[in-house]
Image 1 (cartoon, rainbow, N blue to C red):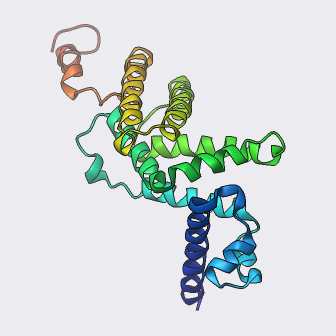
Image 2: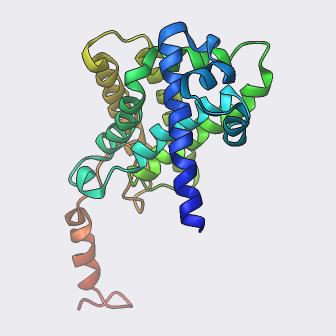
Length: 231
């Protein structure tokens, strides 16, 4: 029964989000109302209200779609790539999911950042933090302590700069913004290599160090017994 109930919920949520996006594409996000979604979908207002408390919740549901598209990247798609490229692929999957309604995305973010909407500011900070953690997680980027803190701070800055560029990017498929993303990640990788302790083989923007790099030391240790006597 629970599975049947969930099957009934998902199409309604999808219809509402799709209708809101279509209305925003026609008249702008500020003109989207629950009542106009009623007119577009034919769903009762009470039914829409049961799934979404307001229009902002509909916007969040759309961004959740983009998050799930990013999380859907498989290890096969990322295999053999440097860490910076894995992050880039995850980020681009998120952006490409939003791309068909990029103008609407910009309007939603501006709406959330209005000075008269302080109740949206704190959730935005948490949403940004979750996005950064998701990017590192999908890309399988290891890190701990100060290195992890630096990864999160650096990727947060890259995310904000890239998103601002992408929202205004009129190049085909927003390739200009995507090239800028890869350049910033590569630059961050050079810093990460400098910060990385010898025992930590991962970084946000570099591939793992080859095992051969530590072989000479291992061989030398095997040649000596405790007390300094050669093996």
